[in-house]
Length: 331
Image (tube, rainbow, N blue to C red; front, side, top):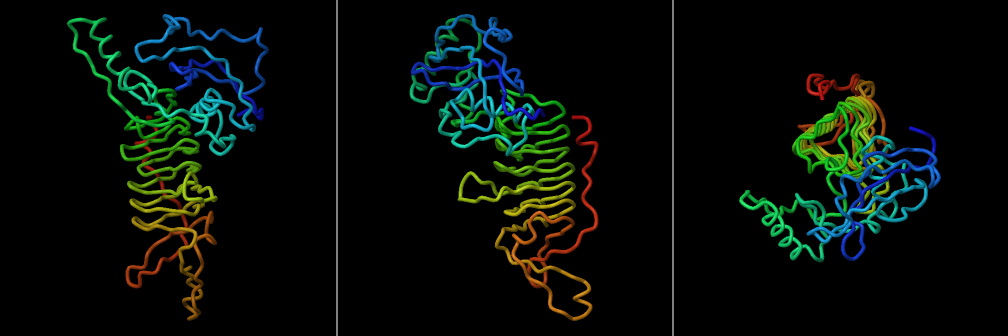
């Protein structure tokens, strides 16, 4: 990625009757200094805008040219959408953009199979859309308006299709997710905005906002990773390379390379962990007991619960896990 802290591009905005921007789609973005007004490329949206009047949803689609200063506060909804697109387009990695206050710049939107609706007028506009469909295609089956979600951030795949990626359920990756080539997100997996994978990865659990997962790592089914959006947490969790977060496990600390957290085990910063040292055991010396935070980010650790004593232990692990290459190399 360029060292420039500016990004720009033409977007197509959906604007409701009150003048609120519901969303902006950017088919292409450029990182670097923006061209002067007279030198801007054509937006090429002409064929997509039959007219600029409001449709049956009460929504107009308007071209917008957006320049984002990536270290500065978010200016408006168009700027917020540009930054979310940058991450899903792999033009900016998670935790490298100023996203402070992003929710205050985004409208809560009714996301449907007919596109975004304003929440305040949805009930009436829904009937208008269905009536227009019946009027314009008489004698044909008519699909009603189906609500996909009520949220500020839409599904990533409605806006960006990254290469070399599989996502089994389109609702499991939000716009702003960063998915590297070789990543597979299974049906119960989830990747939030400003989070994602930095290499080939299997995602069957939840990657929360601010979390990044290294190459060759596996987030097991039902696994949970603490984020920073709620609860007041400040530590941004990361997982290194060739590590495994077991099924239904969870972490509130970072994992280094070649680590494993046993299935069903949740390790937080305050968890008391016995550090297994074979030399000390052989000498009959007591083992160290530390808080999880002291092991955060360290490599080659197996976190496991002793099935006899119930104590959580950290044991040395020589090598990391290896993903099934057949599941990832043909994405």
